[in-house]
Amino acid sequence: MATTIKTSEEIDKMRIAGRLAAEVLEMVESHVQPGVSTDELDRICHDYIVNVQQAVPAPLNYRGFPKSICTSLNHQVCHGIPGNRLLKAGDMLNIDVTVIKDGFHGDTSKIFFIGEPGVLAKRLAGITYECMALGIRMVRPGVQLGDIGHAIQRHAEAHDYSVVREYCGHGIGREFHEEPQVLHYGRPGTGMTLEPGMTFTIEPMINVGRRHTKLLKDGWTVVTKDHSLSAQWEHTVLVTPEGYEVLTLREGESI
Ligand code: MF3
Ligand code: CO
Ligand code: CO
Image (cartoon, rainbow, N blue to C red; front, side, top):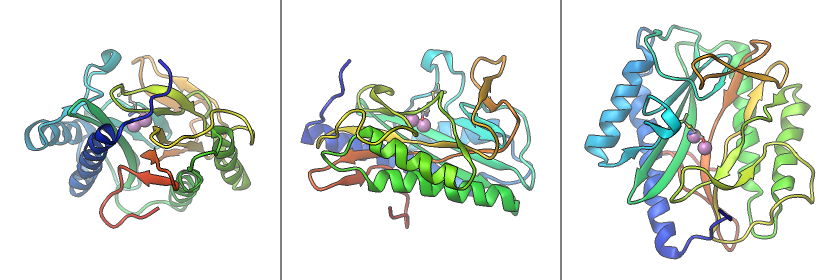
């Protein structure tokens, strides 16, 4: 399916789905504590999405994914499956939430620290957020996806980090994953040219060590091959006539 341009009615629905996804991350924050399992966080998010938001957790049963959120811990890159592992001080956890409301998807993820973060984790998470934010700030009609990917890659590599290549951002709307693929690396002047009404995610995965990843036997959890720490943040973005609108901003966040 080609990249879709959303109508203003569809954009209104994307705004609602985006806000709901952001609100799940706000809600779960107080529950991310030492001694809590990622299964408990999954249950809390599932119940909130279904009962309070009257929305659908998109990951559940998506291509066989067994849970309602993804929880990726420390050297896990993405798509971690919630389980009975208990969080402990010093852990760094990405929670990735995707909700469907009125037929449209909102997709966003955030890093949480359990207890006091280590220096390495704090620095990686900060630079990874900067990678996402500087990519988002480039979004406007006429810009090419390769321009954005290049800027993200340059910022990560300037700090001696590496960019994961096997997974990328994506168009989003009625489908969870639509065209285009939004690579977090690339060459300026290449790739799709942005137009108003496009909606897609920017969700860089940045590693302290080498960029290579490995898929665990559970068929989902992606880890760094060298077991180095990996971080990710994600927002859903709309291309507006003037620039961009972040559809999944949390309270107090501005990009
Ligand atoms: N939310 C992820 C993304 O950003 C996709 C998760 S797919 C799942 O694209 F099946 F693992 F949930
Ligand atoms: Co996504
Ligand atoms: Co996501």
